[in-house]
Length: 432
Image (cartoon, rainbow, N blue to C red; front, side, top):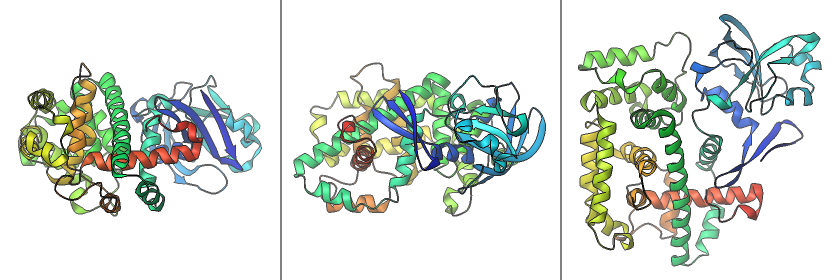
């Protein structure tokens, strides 16, 4: 079910959508963020009347009255033009908000909508025809994943007072059970997203796209995805020398049409996109068949679990020792990444990308990559989340070192609480 509701103006427009794990909201502001960041497949961007759209510059995000983006530079049907861009969840919102009669919208050159519709053009003032671009078929992820990622981004800077008070009131057993439940909700959601990607791209390209996306962090996620779509894995593997790799990476930054906009301000030197791309070029040239090898390691991880009795009842420390997790981490760094990646970013890549891909690939419910996922090292995590988990005694001591599952459990709990505030207690118990 889809419906639109709002507050005191169009900026409050929100679509309420029934997802696999309960209802979720998709605000118009999130659609604007997607446009600003270019988080869609621009290669297949065509207006409803068949003209190709190239985004040279998305425009300045306008948070006041008037069009959402001003001064955009677009190539529509081969003609470069400068003007404003207005975004709506539905094409009918243009008429509902009275834009045709508002002079502030006279410079709109493109009407961007989320959901498909039957309108080929939008009627502007004095009968002027404005082309319509529908974003839903172009999105890299489904709407629920975009909404979840936006919620995670908000929670990274969210005060933890409520979480501390609510979770501290639980007994240790109940607290661990609740966080495990929430962590498993996060796992199943990540596996679902990974399966969508595999179904769309195939195993090798799904691995390729996932790796580049995670190497891009949040700031450069969109250009990394655009780059992965333009340059498949086969384009990276012939780069045999440092000179070839350096030239290839520099060519990626020389995009003349603005296909991807790199963000470098405020990013640590080790996380600069050029550095990460060089690492990936080194990785793929050293391990050209790494997606197939990762599938093989997945089988080995499962066999390792099969050989261990009562593995599910183990504390994190015991699980890591029994499974020789540190050795597996070194094996993945070498056999998959060619020693090009290490530390927290490697752990994040394994947990946010590699293991969910294995979960999506599993042919039966007997495969248990989620056990590895829950007990793995936590990777890139806000320090205050770890501090809260220590204060709650969820992590700490010999048996319970910091783990990815504990962090994801806390995050899943916070996402569930946010959902309750948006939709009421009906969202309780449906996972995240």
